[in-house]
Amino acid sequence: MIAVLIIDMQNAFFEDPVLSNSREAVTRACNAIIAAAQENAARVLLVKTEHEEDKSTWTLNMLEDDQGFIFRGTPQAQFVTGLTTDGLPRMVKTRDSAFLGTDLLLRLRNWNVDTVVLAGVSTHNCIAQTAADAFGHNLRVIYAAEATASENPKAAAAVQDILCREYRQQILPVAEVMNRLMTPLKGQEVMS
Image (cartoon, rainbow, N blue to C red; front, top):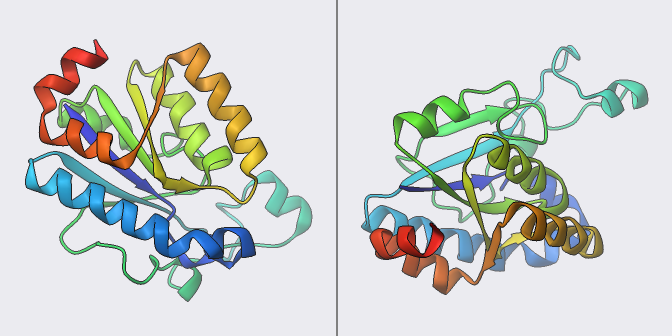
């Protein structure tokens, strides 16, 4: 089974000028994948980052800089306007990897998932960390090319090159991802 993880499509991340320029296109691509998944009974999970103002969830660099980010309940923590969210399950994380300190693996196991499609931001950080941990849990990974973005395209390309080569992960155009979601058995045969 395939599940789609939409990662960090939140206002705070698109405050970066580079990501801001890609917000509408990435949102459209994420929505296309969500629609294909919903039409074909594939699972979709909206993953977001949120922190507490009391520093209890802050990362090391946030603590060292004494500057928090994406506080729960603020406009920064909200999903970007236009992203399909109605009726979809959500999960909150406090680290780059969606697996660290969350129940993501349990959810994926309950859904009998063996392949995750990753979409959202940032490709070189949260997407890559989640992808590396997915490999550690014996899950296949597909990156939805047009549905991911990074404020550092060179770093994104470098990390994806390593993950694809070493972990046999794939970067596919959204149209191909949608095709895999529409024909899960065919996708399973190709991925095996």
